[in-house]
Amino acid sequence: MRLGFVAYGTGLVLLLLADMLVSSLFSPDDISDWALLRSLIGISAVLPLIGLDQVLVRRPAASAQVLRLLSFQVPVLSCVVGVILFITEILPNWWIGSLLAIGSAASLAQFQYFRSHHKRVLSQLAQQGWKIAAFVMVGLMVVTGWRGDLILSGVLLVLTTNIVMAGAMLRLPPSQLHPQTTENVGKHYAIGSRFMVTTLLLAMSVYAEQVVVNRLGNSTDAALYFTSATYFLFPISFLNGYLAFLIGPWLRDNHDRFAGFLHTRWLVIVGFPAAAAALLNLLGWWLWQVVTPPVGQVDPVLQGLFFLMAFVRTLYALPSGYLGVFGMPHQHDILILLQIVALVPVVALFLGLRWVGFDLVHSVAAASALNWCCRTLVGYGMTAKIIWLRSGEPRV
Image (cartoon, rainbow, N blue to C red):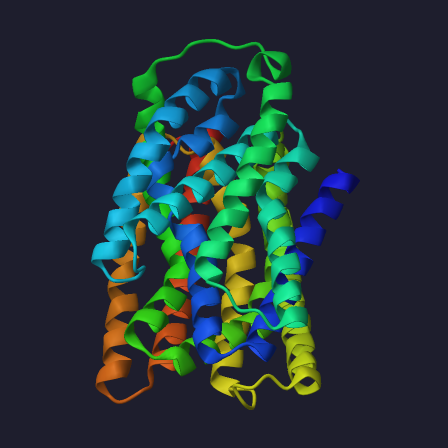
């Protein structure tokens, strides 16, 4: 576990340093491209996987079968993603989007494969490898002054990491890690398709805000939003990302302990994320004064909204992990419906703020903060409902 944490921490810290270098030393156009790359890596993987990456965690005995399915569907569906990104004018070429989707999907599948089989170091290397390479690339750009195509360069880094981790998978095939069985493919897709929708909603919640700012605003807007997120939001990922990494397999084996903890230690569950978000928010403010990024002074509205997002995103790690392991297909249907309904006030807030004259970055951040509050309330409500049903208590 220690080496896994080192790999995780190294990747996240180096990516944060790369973000700080880009936001401090690059032009607004380059910052905009970098921010778009970071966002699309998280979004483009969802459709090609159809949720089968989550099935790898739930059903390690079906790893070989699931990997065969992924080897066919990922390239085909990634081309669809590439065309969508081209038609919507988010990327200039469909093939760049397709390669990005292939690399992102493969990275996530490799991460979940090793995670399911408790190979934590390899799992983290699959997810963090491109981030380490990205820091090296950005560092070379800073030292040499060379500025290449940041999006294409990032895609190549992700694909290179995929190839390296594929070699590790060949040395540790599914049959060596867990006795393998062949299960009903329909069952994989029945739960996987639900995971795809919930993951897409999650990915859009995490990454779409930057895409919206890039698409509707200018490079200055994109640079301000990304720089503010770098100092006030991204650092909390060090905490909630590793918590999410550990929580799924642990919950799978410790359901009753978790249910008891949720009931008796709710003050800790709320208080710890709040304290961590506040501490990192203050640290971000101090670093901003030291580094003085070119976008100007700290925007206090963005700082406050990013604090709220950091807090609720950390809270969300627990119900997200629980529902991923124990949620049944019909329960995921309810979860999806509730999350879609919760988007109504989010969209209304964004449009309303724009209508009364609020600027784009504040409108997007406010809508994103409300979205995370709604998602977290829905997640804990569904978790409590499933725990109650599993306890066998009679309905009242």
